[in-house]
Amino acid sequence: MVKTPLKYRTIPLLENGDKLNRYEFERRYNAMPELRKAELIEGIVYIMPAAVRFRTHSQPHGWMVAWLGIYEAATPGVALGIEPTVRLDLDNEPQPDAVLIITPEAGGQARLSEDDYIEGAPELVVEIAASSVAIDLHGKKQAYRRNGVKEYIVWQVLEQKVTWFYLEQGEYLELAADSDGIVRSRVFPGLWLAVNDLLAGNMQQVLMVLQTGLQSNEHRAFVEKLALVGD
Image 1 (cartoon, rainbow, N blue to C red):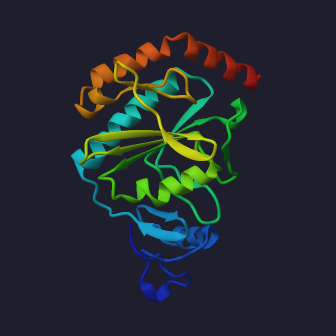
Image 2 (tube, rainbow, N blue to C red):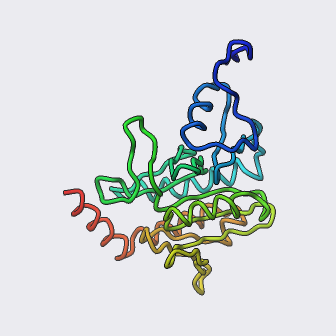
């Protein structure tokens, strides 16, 4: 993509650390088509590097998308998004690695704007983080919690840790695994994650556990509930 020469720009460039509201952030972002990814977190601009490492981001991202994609396919009324722009509030416009929403037609809490962006809080957000020092466990977590993201999964790849938070009375608590090492969503019945197998790269077992969740009575009842709302 050809970059616009600086002397022809009438809108200021986005820069790391800029303090902007969402409207000004979008105005500058839209004027920079060459920019791959930028986020507004708690009023501060973060520009993501163009290069993405394979084992510490791209592959884990792909595994999470595969897991969520199968759930979406088996659950009418649920939609998966990959790196969508999410208009949370005036100070926050992230592009999370993945989101899972209950569609507006099925009674979900987020909505789609006329220009096709998510507005409001997705039910579930997933972020792939290098380690615990990443913004995903600090500024983003605070913004997601305050705006009502019901569940938030952070995969700290270098530390070999997956943390699944759920919103309880305005605070994020950690969703614990059961005795079989499986974490089960409280918002999306049947969305089961075999965490140790995921960390070991055993996707066959991860997807087998998910299929067991999709065959549960809880998932069946959830699908029926979504269908009733949609009607």
